[in-house]
Image 1 (tube, rainbow, N blue to C red):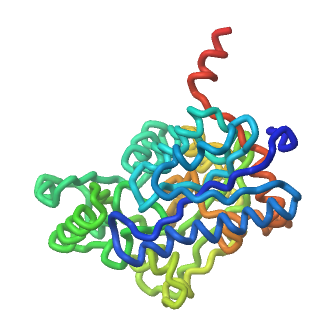
Image 2: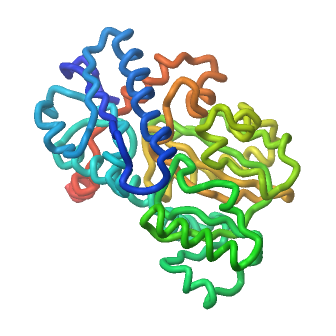
Length: 348
């Protein structure tokens, strides 16, 4: 645990973009939501009488950080990169590591691994954890060579979060719709398309924090207002567009109403997933649980939204803790990440 009094103050590092280099124009809503989150965290820190600097990253993180001595400043890291660039989030974490900062969240390796959903799924599968079967398609022309996954299928960008690139058309029922959606993802989001089997089941989120990570109360998305199983997804509208039917009818129930045996299975899966991908400090695992109680991990988010209205704080809040406590608890666990340093120490 870091001693905050050993530092001059805290830099709340976040991305501030006025445009994105890929995707849809509406995607900027989620990107700019990070600004509101950063402001809320800064306000909580200042309430705790901690000197706090709100520092946006525009283009060059190296230049942005040059004014802040790693020996004097802690970093509350919310940065995901300017303009929605792929893997900037992990690169910024690697930059913080290389300069020797103590910072919140996971190391660059864990962020890079979980950003690439196909790579993360490979790690999960090797660890014996269920994840929906998948293809990774770099071109729609590859579809004719693929066999074995029955419709409906779910199509999404391989390396986005916050439901970017996910809409009603993401669930496809035939080869034409599949080809169209794969083409859309590749053309609009400038990356490969991840095609997964559609898992019909309850959607559960497992938020975790601390060193080592411990689970907060599990959450469930309430899809009761949606008649068809294939419409029960957390798409971009459900996550960000407040005036939409999807947003208004996908409340999060926390704690989730789960049978004790099923809760134990889900919790074990979530912690194993976090362990095998190297997540630390705070993170979230999203999964689908089938009617017969089998959890399928959809993705791991090493930098979930910490806004006052987001699911992570909701899981904290139901335990009776305040937003200020959450922010301080995460900050208290800030550390210097270095796999090489840890490896070298083990041989002393």
